[in-house]
Amino acid sequence: MSSRPIQSSDGPVEVPVPAKVTVPKLLARKGKQPPITCITAYDFPSARLVDEAGFDVLLVGDSMANVVLGHASTLKITLEQIISATRAVRRAADRPLVVADMPYGSFHLGVHDTVRNAIRLVREGGAHAVKLEGGASRAHLVAALVEADVPVMGHVGLLPQAVHVRGGFRVAGRTREGAERLLADALALEEAGAFAVVLEGVPAPVAAGITRRLRVPTIGIGAGPDCDGQILVFHDVVGLNFGPVPRFAKRFGAVADEMRRALGAFRDEVRNGTFPGEEHGYSMGESLAEGWEAEAPQPWAEPGDEA
Ligand code: KIV
Image 1 (cartoon, rainbow, N blue to C red):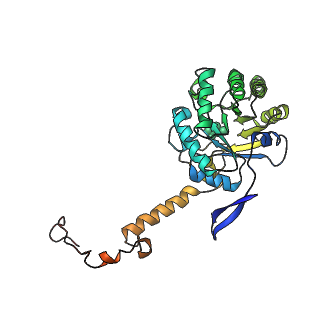
Image 2: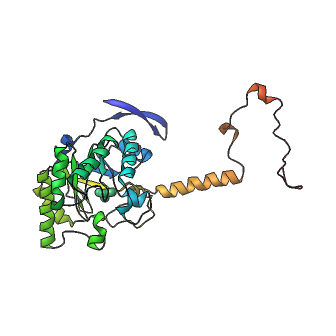
């Protein structure tokens, strides 16, 4: 096992880097404990922290539109933005399987366009796999991507990209008919070759039933404890979210509070002259040390101004 240095509170320490997560390794985790751990990340520092924490799957989600770019929906984010974020994430993350979300509009114009866009995510972004929203009606796209050697993660249930069609962010599978449609959607994606299916905003017993029926792992978000894995949005987990936090998200930290403290301390030290200290500066070359006038006249100063 290789190792790499990480910054701990006691300074840099070498930690082992466990073997990379691959699609076959994830498939082998179906029905096993511990559950598969997944989280989103959208840039170098967050991806590095996710890697250090040992997550199995890192999703460059289109939720970046909300939590990074401040949009009210995910519909605004472009393929170029996801490619750029995926590149940064891949520079930071060695171990997890990196899945890039196919944004709204990138798989809606036909099979050819979908495959071309997914290949851009793999080739230009460095993604190991892609994710796209939708059930049976998207199965032919999943099959075409798998045929083009692009591993696909499906996504059914609450579909943020369908916000206008559904009239909001709607929990799915609350009725018998809805639950059966959801199961049919998940089975269609599996049949088309998806290596995993995200179940978002689904009643726990329905998600548990779908998980039992599928041969590929299910990854839950607001879908109860019986899925094969769980995913949450990075900013919700660490407490760096300024918008509404969904009911299913749990905050495990208060990073925004720590950032506020650091920013306030920097501002105050600038204002009171404590920062920068001598240790943050550079010495002059000897030839310059004599004859450089720090106390030079200030032609811009009004008469009577303090120097
Ligand atoms: O974009 C995203 O963060 C997602 C997860 C909620 C699964 O699609």
